[in-house]
Length: 274
Image 1 (cartoon, rainbow, N blue to C red):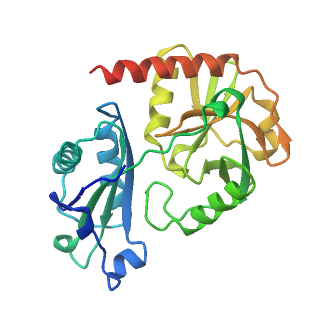
Image 2 (tube, rainbow, N blue to C red; image 1 turned 90 degrees about the vertical axis):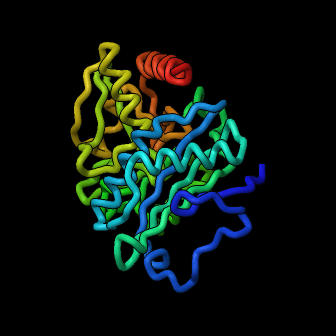
């Protein structure tokens, strides 16, 4: 679908007028942050969470701007209404400037891309790459290593590339978070060392509300065979089980994972009714 309008600093404009100058050093050097928001059948999923994370990401890298939480929300709603769309992905780019007054916020509608439903049931393959992001708590435009890792993963038929730190711990994916299940225990990499995904937070919330025990700890690459399940989360893919990582086949039990997936789906259905 071709969308006719985008938003620049809250003002709706024809999409053919969308451009960023080649002289914009802040954009060229990646001095910006972004969010991708899922909209499905008229429901904007977790808009408040995404706006909060966008503002936090800007704060982490020292990007000053004039856009507050409510203004960003209203701009998203106006764009969706103007484009008359019920299902889309919303992309927000917040680009810094010399001063807070010269920061710019672009919001666009994108055609949504969803994972093949087969891998939701059969599991996905992932590869690993040694990499640690400079600002793990910020969703920045400085994405070249992630882009290259993801491109390599796709070329190898993998769903994503998982980043490994210098201590050989699994941290996160190039565009996903990773969680592990051992029995009824849900384990996450240490949150301060990763980008906490919005869908990840909802998975944790659902799990804790339904009798799962949650903890944060290192997940050593060498220990992956000790878990019943490893799985990825993201705004557009919800939960994706992993069936293999590099050349290791993962053969745990998915009983608790399947239950968690079902609980998350129920939670998302209830959210869409609010």
